[in-house]
Amino acid sequence: MTLVWVGLAIIGSVIAIAILINLFEWITFFRKELRHLNGEIQRTSGRERAYWKKRKKRLLLSIIPFVKY
Image (cartoon, rainbow, N blue to C red):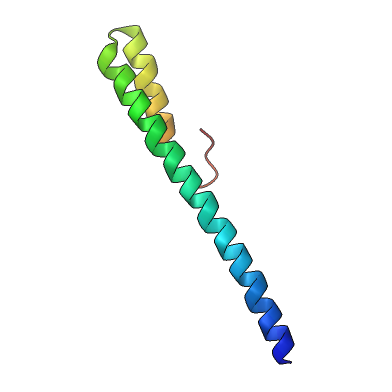
């Protein structure tokens, strides 16, 4: 019985580590992309600025689960 609990703990730990790694990678991508979009918004004007603002809005909406960027 103890072996089952140890096995479940190991599997749970592996899954938790995988989730944390994935979350860290997503946060890194999010920060990099947000920095890029803010730079493009500051650099441009007119219709092109509206395009970059729309992309920024989509990026911010991607925080919601199941919304693709």
